[in-house]
Length: 74
Image (cartoon, rainbow, N blue to C red; front, side):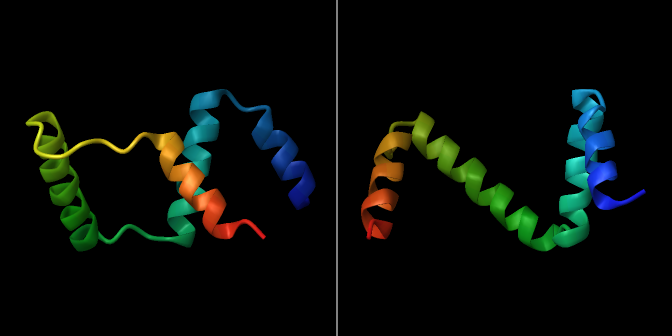
């Protein structure tokens, strides 16, 4: 089976199995690093707590993308 056939077969899988396949492939390219993941999880929980407590304001997603578009516009 060549790559094209493999992709065609994968596309025919149920969505849950495709998600598992994608996750497995991505992990093979970028293995999890539990220490780094733990730091990110701690930071995310802290930031969510700050947001819910009203200590910080959320930045609308579209504003973020607008800044990115302006920065990379040529």
